[in-house]
Image 1 (cartoon, one colour):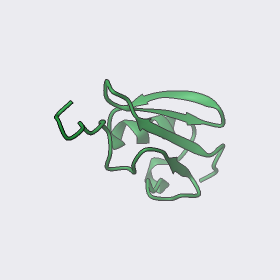
Image 2 (cartoon, rainbow, N blue to C red; image 1 turned 90 degrees about the vertical axis):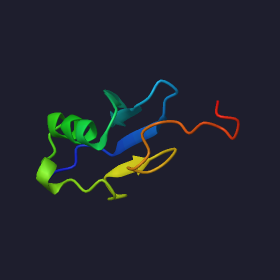
Image 3 (spheres, one colour; image 1 turned 180 degrees about the vertical axis):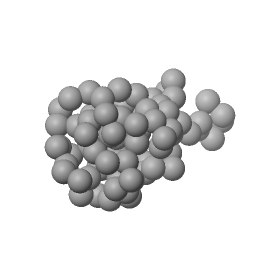
Length: 77
């Protein structure tokens, strides 16, 4: 697998999903790990070789691969 650029998964958005970019290029908003893998496949990565926990490939901001929505505060907002 060749890595074209480091992938950044940005913090969850209030409306759901996480913006994904690679090498400064916006790949879209993924709403699940399955959608993220599809974005990476379209960017030229082999989905069978992608490990979402690999810090050399993916920089997770605002939570790791298990976080896809914002968490409400203590008052439920």
